[in-house]
Image (cartoon, rainbow, N blue to C red):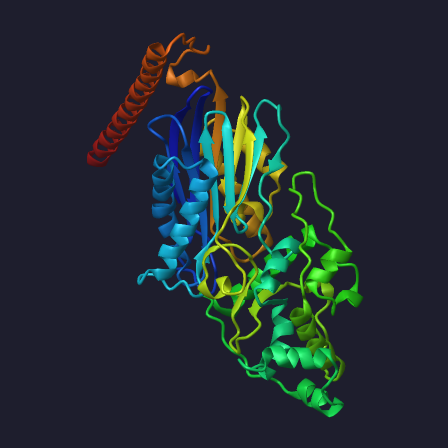
Length: 479
């Protein structure tokens, strides 16, 4: 388990304390699988633009992808700020540039590997959240001034606006089972024409019967833990989509996902952000391919997959290979998926922080079985942010163990905000009155100097304690 703790100053507002914890998951099919989660915390020396990031890798090289984000996005963000960019522009450019580095790196195979990203930036009293993928950010309060709230809206195929972009770029949205029924009949040249001709009912019935009876050879996926992990991930995504978009009945099986969402907007919890409006688009290719499935299922012994197990994925509409098969719509890396609409560009949420606020950013290992209110409740029971992050990770792992025979990687960063009352840092509880620029510079320098002195003292005390324990253990060993 990797852990981290730190304290810092928010210029003109107060202070914060943060802690992080990351725990390797467990997959029976690959017990030696590395932790593909990474996190990065950068406390700014000027008490402005503090940076926190969590990155959740996926695919064979997912660990390398997330590690690259850990070592690169923060550097590029700081570089952008020195050029006078705003926080949002700096984060956006850092993501775009990091994605470019990742896809060109000789050390990383990012064809079918990539990573999510969730960033929190603190500047004075402003909080900026940027996210790409299904990693999450949550805000709550130790003083009950704010209700727990999810600040991110996962980039997956339950979002009509995300589906619309994928389909505009030539992607096809359907389940693995649906895709398996037609992939044997697709070539690089005929995939679109096949779909359109079936949509126009131009094929003869005997051709359709032959189509239904044909059983295409399976094409192995490149998942790092094989079919078992793929099935497990499908089950998790199904549950997540079920929570966000309940399908009405089995009559909707042959309806395209985008059409379903236009006809039945899923209910959302108070903590879920409102989706963007669905753009008008042409879904003819996606619907035509579903018509192939409809006809094949009608004329064969293969039964349609029931709605309650429907897990949509993104497929190439022009490739005969079974790729990319991803269930997310934004990520860094994932070269194949980016050719059909997946993007590295994050979405943003900005708000003003308050005294007693609690901020959590985490991989989906935390949010799989815990909602925003439960996460904030667990964190609020503990005063130290590092202990809070560790407890949140362990609580999440316990739920994974209870509900599965495997566990995802789990990572969380916890930030406690304190307004003008820094307590243990030894800084005055009241705002500093400043009458002119010279005093302002002096006060800020003094404030930060005292903070560094306190920080140095705490580290020295920690080293002394560790030395004392080591000597005591050595004495006991010699007795």
